[in-house]
Length: 389
Ligand code: NI
Image 1 (cartoon, rainbow, N blue to C red):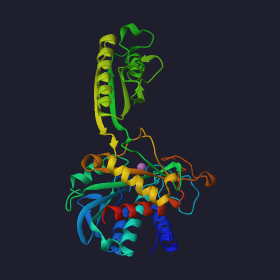
Image 2: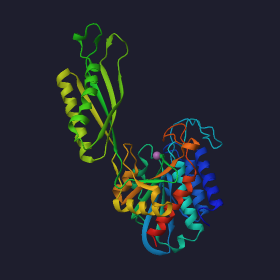
Image 3: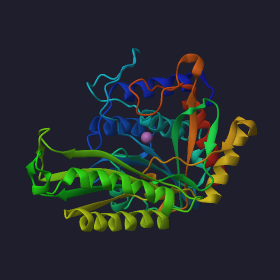
Image 4: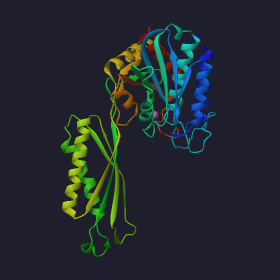
């Protein structure tokens, strides 16, 4: 058994397409979990349920004593209608693996297959825990898995993960030395004014004008309050108010998201939002309620783990194929594993412009060059081998 083996490459493609054709939304990954369990059992891997949660844990016990390395793969899909015309097109209306989680799942199953069938796992000092995580897209799966004790019994020492990246050509790997993703929080601002006739605004208090000032004012948080060497994002993505052109409504509702790379910057943004809201109340005579929903912390790789995976990828693919890359302002609930244990998530290039495979993640046209499957397997098998022998 070899990873460049035709049979292995074929198995990876067939397995990935099976997941791709049957995508399931966050917390609904029942068939997906069953399929994963079936494969793990066929490979003689110990299977553990997650007590009422979709998702699966596989455990490969090495012969000797040593660390336990966890490999995490997210398994959920998105509410997107696939527009690719391929034989393995999603068979679930309005649901699609548009973020490559079918690929992550297949890669980690491929690692298990290789380790078991090549006899490598029998020689390892330590254990491998395969964390097939539900509901990454909702940002809740990692927290729920950790709450169910997946990092204990046996105690996990490090967690490795990957995410496909269509921005990087297939065959290349991008590594974030420390910061990989931003934090993501949400807020809702309800502004209460006083309804009136649109022709007689002086008789009311216009919440739309107050909301418009709020949106304008928050732009200065990034430009005037955050140090110029740091960054953050504030986006108001929803502004709902009013019912007719000649009516001043009673209320307006604004919803937005905040992204930041550092905790202190995140807190500074939130403090300034509250101050601006207080100012809006004073200036316009409206009353505001601000509902802040804490989302995901920033995802920070452990530098020792990220440089370890960097070296492994360079060894497997050649040093010219691996590079350190800047973080992104998206979020990733792998952040929670990275808070609990030294961890790193790396990016596997899956793009191929010549084949038209360069659509972004979450696009209805997203697809990968399947060469990424065996590359992912090679990198993580080598990482396990190096970490546990
Ligand atoms: Ni994703």
